[in-house]
Length: 119
Length: 306
Image 1 (cartoon, chains in turn red, yellow):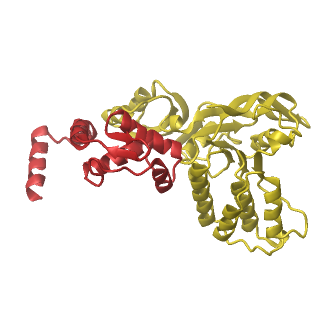
Image 2 (image 1 turned 180 degrees about the vertical axis):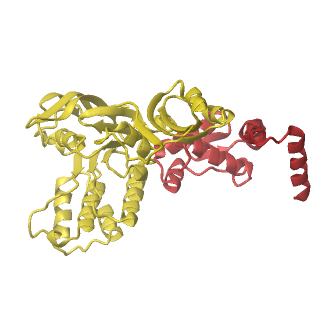
């Protein structure tokens, strides 16, 4: 793992991403902590911590003796949470950089619109 | 979680050298512990005392609740793989494995044979004719297949190439997952093991500098760079470890609890923030032999605290 944040948070985020993009379906089974540990080459206790974080916030639930599953409605909930983070993670740095270059907010809006149309 | 090893105020002196200087710590059961530090920091001395091969000058050592020295009950439950293991002359690889099978109660022959294939060890060859890397691989096979409840690996891979080292990590992790046990891994290749170890002990000149969860350390030491005033403002709450300046730009390495909002704060101040790897942290915290880092004119660099 290259990222500077704790590995268990990165594991939790990777699972969240898979749920958001549909790789992990709601009510689908999640890889076991041992599988995650072997795949990412990390300590199994760390992988378990990441999975447990998602169990604690209700994204995943445990079926005793079988494994971990994605909760119903997890995708919509994650989407809501990630939208809140979007402003902080992407919009704020965009504004900071724009200010440094002397780009006015109105000009920035035009740039976004132009980019959006050209897609 | 119970402690497998408990050390209290351990000191080891020999011939006027203080190898261990009053260190205390405990190691929890069934975890992978990283024992880090520079050459001469005291890592091997510590492991020798823990495995009953050396006497402490003073202090208490308890392994599985008992003193390890000449204690059959304790010694039978541990395996110590040394950097340069020497074997009696005329032993072949198969002889070493057969001896290990007799010595280690938890030895798994099937696993040992599988590892011999993985590391492509020539079974019939005399151990004295093995290459440096093969000798290390043999030690790793013995250390892993012994499945001892307490396994020490002291810099186990001298001469091993990157591929073989990755084999070691993968098999260590897989077998540890299946058969949890306490592992103490001493190494200089910190970046390679930083995701495997759960707990870090950092020794420096006989003193214990860190006794911390690896996850807690991640993001605790950061390097921030930008205009001097903004850098100062950002680093206000942390402990300065290293500073380098070029003109009005400063790069500062600081230790502190910056939290998840650190990235946002740095961005708002127009600074570049990088988290230090475990290896960087160890380098910054360990004592430099020569404190003046060579720098071209115009650049200043200083280790701020010791």
